[in-house]
Length: 450
Image 1 (tube, one colour):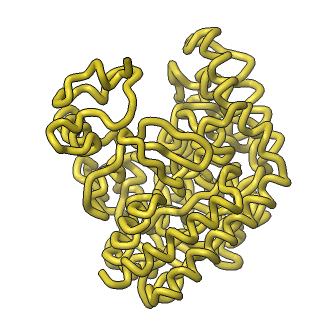
Image 2: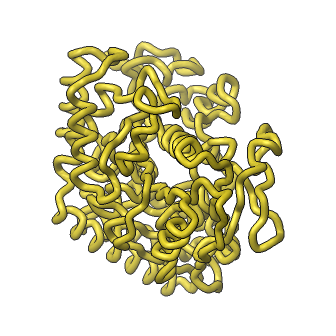
Protein backbone atom coordinates (compact mmCIF):
# COMPACT_ATOMS: atom_id res chain seq x y z
CA UNK A 1 0.00 0.00 0.00
CA UNK A 2 1.40 3.42 -0.95
CA UNK A 3 1.47 6.51 1.21
CA UNK A 4 -1.08 8.03 -1.13
CA UNK A 5 -3.53 5.23 -0.33
CA UNK A 6 -3.40 6.25 3.33
CA UNK A 7 -4.33 9.89 2.76
CA UNK A 8 -7.88 10.99 1.96
CA UNK A 9 -7.94 12.54 -1.54
CA UNK A 10 -9.13 15.94 -0.29
CA UNK A 11 -6.91 16.09 2.78
CA UNK A 12 -5.26 19.55 2.58
CA UNK A 13 -2.46 18.57 4.94
CA UNK A 14 -1.46 15.28 3.38
CA UNK A 15 1.57 16.57 1.47
CA UNK A 16 3.15 17.81 4.68
CA UNK A 17 3.16 14.34 6.21
CA UNK A 18 6.57 12.87 6.92
CA UNK A 19 7.50 10.39 4.22
CA UNK A 20 4.78 11.49 1.79
CA UNK A 21 5.13 10.86 -1.92
CA UNK A 22 4.58 13.44 -4.67
CA UNK A 23 1.25 14.13 -6.36
CA UNK A 24 -0.92 14.20 -3.26
CA UNK A 25 -3.98 16.25 -2.33
CA UNK A 26 -5.40 16.47 -5.85
CA UNK A 27 -8.89 15.27 -5.00
CA UNK A 28 -10.30 18.80 -5.01
CA UNK A 29 -8.76 19.52 -8.41
CA UNK A 30 -6.13 21.87 -6.97
CA UNK A 31 -2.45 21.16 -7.48
CA UNK A 32 -0.61 20.35 -4.31
CA UNK A 33 1.84 23.21 -4.90
CA UNK A 34 -1.10 25.61 -4.79
CA UNK A 35 -2.65 24.01 -1.73
CA UNK A 36 0.58 23.74 0.22
CA UNK A 37 1.57 27.30 -0.60
CA UNK A 38 -1.85 28.50 0.59
CA UNK A 39 -1.27 26.60 3.83
CA UNK A 40 2.21 28.10 4.11
CA UNK A 41 0.81 31.59 3.58
CA UNK A 42 -1.51 31.06 6.55
CA UNK A 43 1.38 30.11 8.83
CA UNK A 44 4.28 32.15 7.40
CA UNK A 45 4.16 35.81 6.30
CA UNK A 46 3.93 35.71 2.53
CA UNK A 47 4.21 31.94 2.65
CA UNK A 48 8.01 32.05 2.55
CA UNK A 49 10.99 32.29 4.87
CA UNK A 50 12.94 34.53 2.49
CA UNK A 51 11.09 37.23 0.61
CA UNK A 52 12.29 36.61 -2.96
CA UNK A 53 10.94 33.07 -2.88
CA UNK A 54 7.38 34.38 -2.98
CA UNK A 55 7.54 35.09 -6.76
CA UNK A 56 6.23 38.62 -6.18
CA UNK A 57 8.58 40.12 -8.78
CA UNK A 58 7.73 37.54 -11.45
CA UNK A 59 4.15 36.63 -10.50
CA UNK A 60 2.58 33.25 -9.93
CA UNK A 61 2.84 30.64 -7.20
CA UNK A 62 6.19 29.18 -6.15
CA UNK A 63 6.99 25.53 -6.65
CA UNK A 64 7.62 23.81 -3.31
CA UNK A 65 10.72 21.65 -3.36
CA UNK A 66 10.31 18.14 -1.98
CA UNK A 67 13.89 17.05 -2.60
CA UNK A 68 16.84 17.58 -4.92
CA UNK A 69 19.57 15.56 -6.54
CA UNK A 70 22.48 16.58 -8.72
CA UNK A 71 21.42 19.37 -11.07
CA UNK A 72 17.70 18.94 -10.36
CA UNK A 73 15.12 19.99 -7.82
CA UNK A 74 11.87 18.02 -7.58
CA UNK A 75 8.69 19.71 -6.42
CA UNK A 76 5.92 18.21 -4.30
CA UNK A 77 4.02 17.16 -7.42
CA UNK A 78 7.00 15.23 -8.76
CA UNK A 79 7.99 17.74 -11.44
CA UNK A 80 11.72 17.95 -12.06
CA UNK A 81 13.51 21.19 -12.83
CA UNK A 82 17.08 21.65 -14.01
CA UNK A 83 18.23 24.03 -11.31
CA UNK A 84 20.19 27.23 -12.02
CA UNK A 85 19.54 28.54 -8.49
CA UNK A 86 21.69 26.00 -6.62
CA UNK A 87 20.69 27.53 -3.27
CA UNK A 88 21.86 30.92 -4.59
CA UNK A 89 25.35 29.62 -5.22
CA UNK A 90 25.77 27.66 -2.00
CA UNK A 91 25.76 24.32 -3.81
CA UNK A 92 28.66 23.65 -6.20
CA UNK A 93 29.07 19.88 -6.10
CA UNK A 94 25.38 19.26 -6.89
CA UNK A 95 22.38 18.67 -4.66
CA UNK A 96 22.67 15.81 -2.16
CA UNK A 97 26.25 15.07 -3.13
CA UNK A 98 27.23 11.78 -1.48
CA UNK A 99 30.36 13.17 0.19
CA UNK A 100 28.39 15.99 1.80
CA UNK A 101 25.38 13.94 2.86
CA UNK A 102 27.64 11.25 4.33
CA UNK A 103 29.60 13.87 6.28
CA UNK A 104 26.39 15.40 7.65
CA UNK A 105 24.96 12.00 8.60
CA UNK A 106 28.13 11.02 10.42
CA UNK A 107 28.27 14.35 12.24
CA UNK A 108 24.59 14.14 13.22
CA UNK A 109 25.20 10.72 14.75
CA UNK A 110 27.68 12.42 17.09
CA UNK A 111 25.18 15.10 18.13
CA UNK A 112 23.77 18.15 16.41
CA UNK A 113 24.95 20.99 18.65
CA UNK A 114 27.18 21.30 21.69
CA UNK A 115 27.66 24.97 22.49
CA UNK A 116 31.35 24.12 22.85
CA UNK A 117 34.46 24.24 20.64
CA UNK A 118 35.00 21.39 18.16
CA UNK A 119 37.89 20.15 16.02
CA UNK A 120 35.79 20.61 12.88
CA UNK A 121 35.43 24.38 13.35
CA UNK A 122 39.20 24.62 13.76
CA UNK A 123 39.78 22.60 10.58
CA UNK A 124 37.28 24.65 8.57
CA UNK A 125 38.89 27.89 9.74
CA UNK A 126 42.29 26.49 8.74
CA UNK A 127 40.96 25.54 5.31
CA UNK A 128 39.73 29.10 4.72
CA UNK A 129 43.00 30.59 5.96
CA UNK A 130 45.00 28.33 3.65
CA UNK A 131 42.97 29.32 0.57
CA UNK A 132 42.11 33.01 1.03
CA UNK A 133 44.87 35.64 0.91
CA UNK A 134 43.25 38.13 3.29
CA UNK A 135 42.58 35.70 6.13
CA UNK A 136 45.03 35.13 8.97
CA UNK A 137 42.25 34.25 11.42
CA UNK A 138 38.61 33.27 10.94
CA UNK A 139 35.59 33.45 13.26
CA UNK A 140 32.64 31.20 12.32
CA UNK A 141 29.02 32.24 12.73
CA UNK A 142 25.58 31.37 11.42
CA UNK A 143 24.88 33.38 8.26
CA UNK A 144 26.17 35.90 5.78
CA UNK A 145 24.07 38.57 7.46
CA UNK A 146 25.70 37.86 10.81
CA UNK A 147 29.09 37.96 9.12
CA UNK A 148 28.58 41.39 7.55
CA UNK A 149 27.10 42.88 10.72
CA UNK A 150 30.03 41.50 12.73
CA UNK A 151 32.53 42.85 10.21
CA UNK A 152 31.04 46.34 10.49
CA UNK A 153 31.02 46.18 14.29
CA UNK A 154 34.61 44.96 14.26
CA UNK A 155 35.77 47.73 11.93
CA UNK A 156 34.07 50.37 14.05
CA UNK A 157 35.47 48.93 17.25
CA UNK A 158 39.00 48.67 15.90
CA UNK A 159 39.10 52.17 14.38
CA UNK A 160 37.01 54.07 16.93
CA UNK A 161 35.07 55.57 14.02
CA UNK A 162 31.40 55.32 13.06
CA UNK A 163 30.90 55.96 9.35
CA UNK A 164 30.49 53.06 6.91
CA UNK A 165 30.59 53.39 3.12
CA UNK A 166 28.51 51.01 0.98
CA UNK A 167 27.74 50.88 -2.74
CA UNK A 168 24.37 51.40 -4.35
CA UNK A 169 23.03 48.03 -5.53
CA UNK A 170 25.29 45.88 -3.35
CA UNK A 171 23.50 43.67 -0.84
CA UNK A 172 25.02 42.72 2.49
CA UNK A 173 22.20 40.92 4.24
CA UNK A 174 19.49 42.02 6.63
CA UNK A 175 21.62 44.27 8.85
CA UNK A 176 19.99 47.60 9.73
CA UNK A 177 23.09 49.72 9.13
CA UNK A 178 23.58 48.13 5.71
CA UNK A 179 19.93 48.26 4.61
CA UNK A 180 20.38 51.80 3.35
CA UNK A 181 19.18 53.23 0.05
CA UNK A 182 20.95 55.97 -1.83
CA UNK A 183 19.22 59.27 -2.44
CA UNK A 184 19.36 61.32 -5.62
CA UNK A 185 22.87 62.63 -5.13
CA UNK A 186 26.07 61.03 -6.37
CA UNK A 187 27.03 60.24 -2.80
CA UNK A 188 24.46 60.61 -0.05
CA UNK A 189 23.99 59.71 3.55
CA UNK A 190 21.83 56.63 3.51
CA UNK A 191 18.09 56.64 3.88
CA UNK A 192 16.38 53.63 5.47
CA UNK A 193 16.02 51.03 2.72
CA UNK A 194 13.11 49.25 4.39
CA UNK A 195 10.38 49.92 6.91
CA UNK A 196 11.50 49.15 10.44
CA UNK A 197 14.97 50.64 10.06
CA UNK A 198 15.12 53.95 11.95
CA UNK A 199 16.92 56.87 10.37
CA UNK A 200 19.45 56.73 13.17
CA UNK A 201 20.52 53.21 12.17
CA UNK A 202 21.78 54.45 8.80
CA UNK A 203 22.78 57.96 9.86
CA UNK A 204 26.44 56.98 9.57
CA UNK A 205 26.03 54.96 6.36
CA UNK A 206 27.22 56.64 3.16
CA UNK A 207 25.86 55.22 -0.10
CA UNK A 208 27.99 55.76 -3.21
CA UNK A 209 27.90 54.51 -6.83
CA UNK A 210 29.45 51.13 -7.59
CA UNK A 211 32.63 51.15 -9.68
CA UNK A 212 33.57 54.65 -8.55
CA UNK A 213 36.24 55.11 -5.89
CA UNK A 214 34.92 57.55 -3.28
CA UNK A 215 37.07 60.15 -1.57
CA UNK A 216 37.18 59.19 2.11
CA UNK A 217 38.03 61.10 5.26
CA UNK A 218 39.10 60.14 8.76
CA UNK A 219 35.52 59.62 9.93
CA UNK A 220 35.19 56.42 7.86
CA UNK A 221 35.55 53.16 9.76
CA UNK A 222 34.95 50.80 6.85
CA UNK A 223 34.22 50.46 3.17
CA UNK A 224 32.25 47.27 2.45
CA UNK A 225 31.82 46.09 -1.12
CA UNK A 226 30.78 43.11 -3.20
CA UNK A 227 33.99 42.70 -5.22
CA UNK A 228 31.80 41.30 -7.99
CA UNK A 229 28.32 42.73 -7.69
CA UNK A 230 26.03 39.69 -7.85
CA UNK A 231 22.82 41.17 -6.44
CA UNK A 232 22.17 43.61 -9.31
CA UNK A 233 22.75 41.09 -12.05
CA UNK A 234 26.40 40.17 -12.42
CA UNK A 235 28.52 43.31 -12.66
CA UNK A 236 32.30 43.04 -12.77
CA UNK A 237 34.52 45.54 -10.98
CA UNK A 238 35.89 48.14 -13.38
CA UNK A 239 39.67 48.03 -13.95
CA UNK A 240 41.34 49.72 -11.00
CA UNK A 241 38.19 49.96 -8.88
CA UNK A 242 39.14 47.43 -6.19
CA UNK A 243 42.78 48.55 -6.15
CA UNK A 244 41.55 52.14 -5.83
CA UNK A 245 39.44 51.21 -2.81
CA UNK A 246 42.45 49.53 -1.24
CA UNK A 247 44.59 52.64 -1.75
CA UNK A 248 41.92 55.05 -0.50
CA UNK A 249 41.28 52.99 2.64
CA UNK A 250 45.01 52.88 3.30
CA UNK A 251 45.23 56.64 2.87
CA UNK A 252 42.74 57.40 5.66
CA UNK A 253 43.17 54.31 7.83
CA UNK A 254 39.76 52.79 7.02
CA UNK A 255 39.04 49.06 6.99
CA UNK A 256 38.36 47.52 3.57
CA UNK A 257 35.77 44.71 3.76
CA UNK A 258 35.09 42.36 0.86
CA UNK A 259 31.65 40.76 1.09
CA UNK A 260 32.44 37.38 -0.47
CA UNK A 261 29.27 35.65 0.69
CA UNK A 262 28.58 34.86 -2.98
CA UNK A 263 32.06 35.01 -4.53
CA UNK A 264 33.95 33.27 -1.72
CA UNK A 265 34.90 29.76 -2.89
CA UNK A 266 32.54 30.33 -5.85
CA UNK A 267 34.84 32.30 -8.16
CA UNK A 268 37.77 30.18 -7.03
CA UNK A 269 39.42 28.88 -3.89
CA UNK A 270 40.78 32.33 -3.11
CA UNK A 271 37.57 34.14 -4.05
CA UNK A 272 37.44 37.50 -5.79
CA UNK A 273 40.43 38.84 -3.89
CA UNK A 274 42.68 36.21 -5.44
CA UNK A 275 41.16 36.72 -8.88
CA UNK A 276 41.72 40.50 -8.81
CA UNK A 277 44.86 40.46 -6.65
CA UNK A 278 43.52 42.94 -4.11
CA UNK A 279 43.65 41.95 -0.44
CA UNK A 280 41.01 43.37 1.92
CA UNK A 281 41.38 43.78 5.67
CA UNK A 282 38.28 41.70 6.40
CA UNK A 283 36.31 39.18 4.35
CA UNK A 284 32.81 37.86 4.95
CA UNK A 285 31.75 34.37 3.91
CA UNK A 286 28.59 32.26 3.85
CA UNK A 287 26.89 29.81 1.52
CA UNK A 288 29.66 27.70 0.00
CA UNK A 289 31.84 27.17 3.07
CA UNK A 290 28.97 25.23 4.68
CA UNK A 291 28.46 22.90 1.73
CA UNK A 292 24.87 24.16 1.51
CA UNK A 293 24.16 24.26 5.26
CA UNK A 294 23.65 27.52 7.19
CA UNK A 295 26.95 29.17 8.04
CA UNK A 296 28.83 32.46 7.97
CA UNK A 297 32.32 33.64 8.78
CA UNK A 298 34.52 36.69 9.09
CA UNK A 299 38.20 36.40 8.28
CA UNK A 300 40.95 38.95 8.24
CA UNK A 301 44.24 40.26 9.49
CA UNK A 302 45.21 38.86 12.88
CA UNK A 303 45.65 42.34 14.37
CA UNK A 304 42.06 43.20 13.46
CA UNK A 305 40.54 39.84 14.32
CA UNK A 306 41.97 39.95 17.82
CA UNK A 307 39.68 42.89 18.60
CA UNK A 308 36.88 40.30 18.80
CA UNK A 309 35.90 38.96 22.22
CA UNK A 310 37.21 37.21 24.23
CA UNK A 311 40.56 38.79 23.26
CA UNK A 312 39.24 42.27 22.56
CA UNK A 313 36.34 44.62 23.29
CA UNK A 314 34.19 43.87 20.18
CA UNK A 315 31.51 41.40 21.23
CA UNK A 316 30.55 38.37 19.19
CA UNK A 317 28.92 35.13 20.34
CA UNK A 318 26.46 32.54 19.06
CA UNK A 319 25.31 29.22 20.46
CA UNK A 320 25.19 27.60 17.02
CA UNK A 321 28.33 29.27 15.63
CA UNK A 322 30.65 26.58 14.30
CA UNK A 323 27.76 24.09 14.23
CA UNK A 324 29.08 20.53 13.83
CA UNK A 325 26.75 19.69 10.94
CA UNK A 326 27.61 22.81 8.93
CA UNK A 327 31.34 22.47 9.53
CA UNK A 328 31.27 18.79 8.54
CA UNK A 329 29.45 19.64 5.31
CA UNK A 330 31.78 22.54 4.63
CA UNK A 331 34.92 20.47 5.11
CA UNK A 332 33.58 17.77 2.80
CA UNK A 333 32.70 20.30 0.10
CA UNK A 334 35.90 22.36 0.25
CA UNK A 335 38.00 19.21 0.12
CA UNK A 336 36.57 18.49 -3.35
CA UNK A 337 36.80 22.06 -4.69
CA UNK A 338 40.20 21.89 -6.31
CA UNK A 339 41.65 24.39 -8.78
CA UNK A 340 40.73 22.01 -11.62
CA UNK A 341 37.10 22.18 -10.53
CA UNK A 342 37.05 25.95 -10.96
CA UNK A 343 38.58 25.73 -14.43
CA UNK A 344 35.74 23.39 -15.35
CA UNK A 345 33.11 25.62 -13.72
CA UNK A 346 34.32 28.65 -15.66
CA UNK A 347 34.05 26.69 -18.90
CA UNK A 348 30.52 25.61 -17.99
CA UNK A 349 29.51 29.16 -17.15
CA UNK A 350 30.72 30.36 -20.56
CA UNK A 351 28.93 27.45 -22.22
CA UNK A 352 25.67 28.24 -20.44
CA UNK A 353 25.87 31.92 -21.38
CA UNK A 354 26.55 31.04 -25.01
CA UNK A 355 23.61 28.62 -25.16
CA UNK A 356 21.20 31.09 -23.57
CA UNK A 357 22.44 33.94 -25.74
CA UNK A 358 22.04 31.91 -28.93
CA UNK A 359 18.51 30.89 -27.95
CA UNK A 360 17.46 34.46 -27.27
CA UNK A 361 19.09 35.77 -30.46
CA UNK A 362 17.31 33.14 -32.54
CA UNK A 363 13.95 34.10 -31.06
CA UNK A 364 14.49 37.84 -31.34
CA UNK A 365 14.26 38.17 -27.57
CA UNK A 366 16.76 40.85 -26.53
CA UNK A 367 18.92 39.60 -23.67
CA UNK A 368 22.58 39.49 -22.71
CA UNK A 369 24.37 37.04 -20.43
CA UNK A 370 27.49 38.56 -18.86
CA UNK A 371 30.00 36.12 -17.37
CA UNK A 372 32.44 36.82 -14.55
CA UNK A 373 34.40 33.68 -13.79
CA UNK A 374 31.84 31.09 -12.68
CA UNK A 375 28.97 33.61 -12.39
CA UNK A 376 26.42 34.23 -15.16
CA UNK A 377 24.00 37.15 -15.24
CA UNK A 378 21.01 38.02 -17.42
CA UNK A 379 20.15 41.49 -18.69
CA UNK A 380 16.85 41.78 -20.54
CA UNK A 381 16.09 44.46 -23.11
CA UNK A 382 18.06 46.55 -25.60
CA UNK A 383 20.23 48.16 -22.94
CA UNK A 384 23.99 48.40 -22.40
CA UNK A 385 25.61 45.96 -20.02
CA UNK A 386 25.48 47.66 -16.61
CA UNK A 387 28.49 48.92 -14.71
CA UNK A 388 26.52 50.24 -11.74
CA UNK A 389 23.09 50.06 -10.12
CA UNK A 390 21.57 52.76 -12.33
CA UNK A 391 22.54 50.72 -15.37
CA UNK A 392 21.30 47.50 -13.82
CA UNK A 393 17.87 49.03 -13.21
CA UNK A 394 17.45 49.47 -16.98
CA UNK A 395 16.85 45.74 -17.38
CA UNK A 396 13.35 44.85 -18.55
CA UNK A 397 11.86 43.14 -15.49
CA UNK A 398 8.62 42.23 -17.26
CA UNK A 399 10.58 40.51 -20.03
CA UNK A 400 12.59 38.61 -17.42
CA UNK A 401 9.35 37.46 -15.77
CA UNK A 402 8.08 36.12 -19.10
CA UNK A 403 11.34 34.27 -19.74
CA UNK A 404 11.43 32.96 -16.16
CA UNK A 405 7.97 31.40 -16.42
CA UNK A 406 8.61 30.06 -19.90
CA UNK A 407 11.81 28.39 -18.68
CA UNK A 408 9.93 26.97 -15.70
CA UNK A 409 7.28 25.56 -18.03
CA UNK A 410 10.11 23.92 -19.98
CA UNK A 411 11.67 22.38 -16.90
CA UNK A 412 14.37 24.89 -15.92
CA UNK A 413 14.36 26.78 -12.61
CA UNK A 414 15.94 30.23 -12.39
CA UNK A 415 15.89 32.71 -9.53
CA UNK A 416 12.52 34.52 -9.29
CA UNK A 417 14.07 37.96 -9.66
CA UNK A 418 15.73 39.85 -12.49
CA UNK A 419 18.83 40.81 -10.51
CA UNK A 420 20.09 37.41 -9.39
CA UNK A 421 22.91 35.35 -10.83
CA UNK A 422 22.61 32.02 -12.61
CA UNK A 423 24.71 29.30 -10.97
CA UNK A 424 26.24 26.21 -12.51
CA UNK A 425 27.93 23.39 -10.64
CA UNK A 426 29.64 20.07 -11.19
CA UNK A 427 26.28 18.38 -11.78
CA UNK A 428 25.68 20.64 -14.81
CA UNK A 429 27.28 18.31 -17.31
CA UNK A 430 27.39 19.05 -21.03
CA UNK A 431 24.21 17.01 -21.45
CA UNK A 432 22.43 19.03 -18.76
CA UNK A 433 23.57 22.31 -20.29
CA UNK A 434 22.38 21.21 -23.74
CA UNK A 435 18.98 20.39 -22.28
CA UNK A 436 18.88 23.86 -20.70
CA UNK A 437 19.79 25.34 -24.09
CA UNK A 438 16.94 23.45 -25.76
CA UNK A 439 14.51 24.68 -23.13
CA UNK A 440 15.79 28.22 -23.63
CA UNK A 441 14.95 28.15 -27.33
CA UNK A 442 11.32 27.33 -26.55
CA UNK A 443 11.22 29.78 -23.64
CA UNK A 444 12.72 32.65 -25.62
CA UNK A 445 10.17 32.17 -28.41
CA UNK A 446 7.36 32.21 -25.86
CA UNK A 447 8.79 35.24 -24.04
CA UNK A 448 9.31 37.14 -27.29
CA UNK A 449 5.62 36.81 -28.17
CA UNK A 450 4.52 37.87 -24.70
